Length: 636
Image (cartoon, rainbow, N blue to C red; front, side):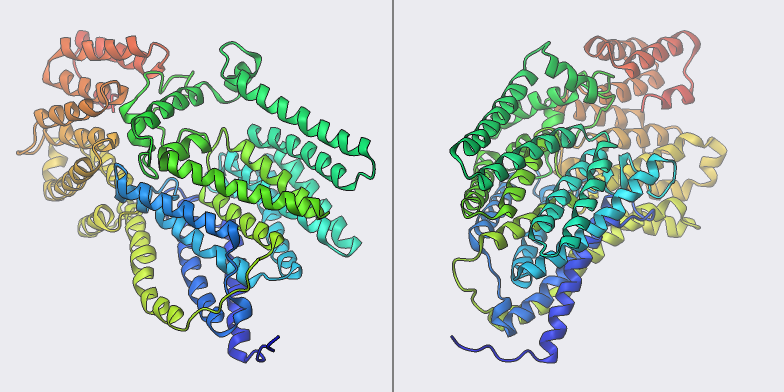
């Protein structure tokens, strides 16, 4: 065997820089900032893009200098990249490639983010080569997850430590938090079974107990049930490994069989109307999931091969809008950008091709871990049980960027446990050189421009002068494709609010600002409608602007708002929001019969929708007592 040359100071420095970069990725769950929209989610996305690009380039230099740190892709990595390739094909053939690539601000799981996640995999498997390396890395993950758990428990007792959390600590949503905890429980479990020192094992088990207590204090019901199932599965697998008698192994097989039959029964009963399981799900989460699951199947039937493209679920929802949206039965939510089931989301995002590749990726993982299980590696039992729990909870939820990052770490850990069959090949020197040359462009287009466009959207709201507001407004509605549609609609709504709050005298005084701002939001939202005709918010909020502008400025009319909303109804004929906005236009035009017909139709389609009841009553009130702007604004 050829002896490797001694590491130079440059080599050591690169190695430590890459390790620090990987450790910083584990801190991303703690990132939050009020300076951006969705401070718990989108802030993490910008931090992730910056960290991953810098870490990957540093790693490539290390791997080109030191063969022992070259990428160890393995079969897991190969299938991960095949899946990312399927995502790329789905993006190209999808209904909105721009959205699929950049994604929306709310989720940040488009192709751009998958490319960055995929780039991290060889860094993890190349740098974390030994059990000691992985133990240190997983210990950092456990420390961060402990802080996230303590932040949640602080929220439970009334300490405000998180910005806008909805029961999910710094992760945001309780479902995302539950998935994050499940994966970190698995990591801590691996630490417990692989630590040589008794003190380390006890510490790992103590942290595991904290995570369990934290999970049970959340409303992440899917993760809670999945945890108990995963616990039983681990017990069965560990018993099978340790059993010295035929009876012991048969008991383990019996436990797994009972668990599998229970799982299949629960899934089956969930789709049986009136069953206790279905009613329990509806009681805890509402009926919206079943409604959007039906819509997902309809959408998948329309585009079965490559799906609609990543991040394009809103197009499916707009096309197959269900009148129950907005009702208490459907969680009072009129907007859905996911169908709340990982398999169905994948079916829409990447079609049958991508879903099959994803299943094959999991098959490779499970097959490899079963091989290690037979060899007596208890860590394989922990990983199988933990990943099974993660998969089960994902049947009723979807991933955030944070959980996807932890999932990539889990895949890399599996790759390490399975071991590489082939010796790694040293990275050619031209690869890091090319990456370094391309890095400034990547930092500009994928980090700086998305951040500045996003940040400008928030800064518009507090701009000290009209000139600065217009400058920021243009930046916010034109710069970068990341979340561009949401940013445009968000600011159109802000402009509409301003127009509806002023009187004629104030509008005259601010006419120059208003006309320029209206022109900017009109151009931007019409561009969105042209590229993504399914994005209903742009129709509604631009019509809101038109209706307000028509009262004070030449060049705008109620007919503009009317025609725009009718275009929207061609895309989504059953949308309550479009019907209500058009009813507001008709009321101001004096076309009261047509307005009442719209609100009546909306109420008939969705009698349980509280807002439909309220707006129909308001329309009747205005027909009898006269139209007022304050009441009209309620329709938007």
